[in-house]
Image (cartoon, rainbow, N blue to C red; front, side):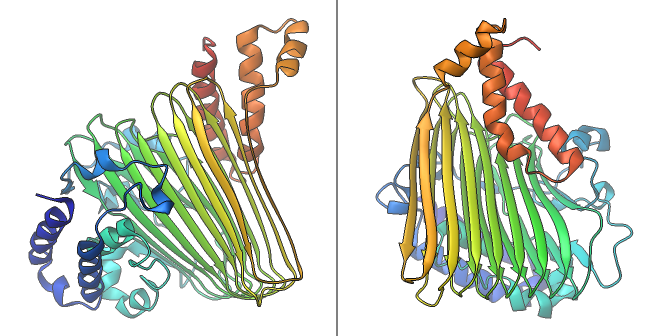
Length: 437
């Protein structure tokens, strides 16, 4: 059975098992999405956006929807929690016994989407699918067609979350060739402030697919600090799309850390739809073995007097490969735009490779925009300097590589998260440098 036929047949089964949900207001969105996917199918290397990423190994597998499984022990997921409260999902299904949702400010809504489809249908339907359009991405269409659970985070006007909120999506990996379609919907009204962590982890050894979509609406003068951490199992496929809409004077800050998975594709699109916006995208990806990571970003300046900053760094070892394709699109109305984009890559082996393409598309004439990309190996002079001070070659490689990655890690503002990421990155780089723990 071909890929589109397979998912069309799975959708028919999925639809029958929805019971009363099939009559709900969200379901027409599902039907439109599966129709679009069936008509267009998966992208191929002939599509410019997917030119350097071969998803044939993924499309050859007939993934079944992940069923609800026994929840793992709290102790087993503790290293993935970073000491932060929030909802937990296991194989795409809400796990209330593992979640921590106490002491939320009055009016704040944090609940699983399956419940929100019923209790907050008007709010969900007002925002879901408005920015993450299925017509733009085949995998977004699949996620929308099979959307069943995920998290709704609603921050009323003027709300301030003092403690970071962490949403964890965990894959058990106990059954081969299953897929989950997590959905995250964040609505931050005017003057709201929050720090949000969205993370993905895997425990098992079987191959699986996580196909996630996150939509974030940042209201006027609101502030969102968003972290996305991907620590999937080495056998996993991970496809993600993050869509952000920012209103006047909003502040949005994103930090993406990619460490796991065999094949990863991250798509980030942020639209600056009002004046006076300050938007930042930070990213770090560290690869070894035969891992492949593809980062696509689009920063869309639609209104004047906004600034954006983008800083992505990659460390690639062994036979790993990566893609960075970032575009800054400045509309004609977006005068006085100030935009900066940089992608820096460090290759630790002769077999590692990266394809990088930063882009500027500018239709306004009064702007300040710059971009650049670098690909290289460690500075031989710097290694020589450290060795002349009595430091061994492998340790010198580790020190310099850690300093390279640290420029992104040091931008993480949550102490517990930063410390754990620093530990994980240091362990990964120690293995690459051959340094004993």
